[in-house]
Amino acid sequence: MLRPTLGDFSSIICFKAAIEGMEETLGEKTTAIALTAAGRNRGKKLAHELGLTGTNISLEDIAHKLKLALGHDGTRLCVIDKILSEGNTIKVYTAETLCSANEPQGSTRQCTYTLGAIWGAIEQIVGKRLQGKHTESVLRGGTHDVFEFTEL
Image (cartoon, rainbow, N blue to C red; front, side, top):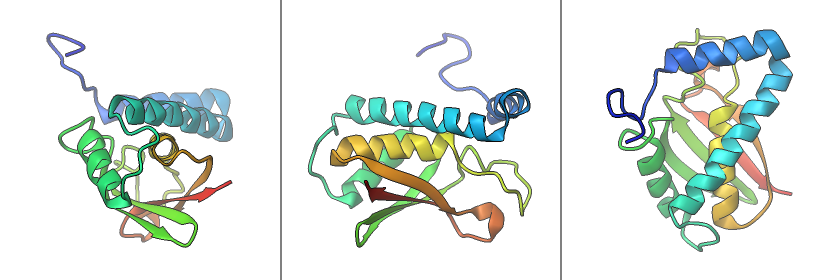
């Protein structure tokens, strides 16, 4: 445990306030770049901590392990419902993402930190450089926040 009284977790409200403060100070694009990079760094470390770096496990197993680490029994960043391969694209279907929490329907908010965390983990696990993007959003009519990763 990192803190003896408060435990390992803090509030989404505080994290999102930090994001909004960064956006006001640095601008939305610069903040998005920084948060995505921070997420990728976290994801790479997570894959290493889980012993998954460079392993040859199925996407189903990756989904299960990341769901445990990032979901209800882990850090609670998001729920990973499934990871699918479509051609040369890996699609990650997430729910209850940190970034979409408490955002109004129609919001243009993109999942930056969450995208980055999953991006970094997937890159480390598959051992390939990937390009990631947030392609569907629960804020704009999607059933999931969907992240797509293609090999560079």
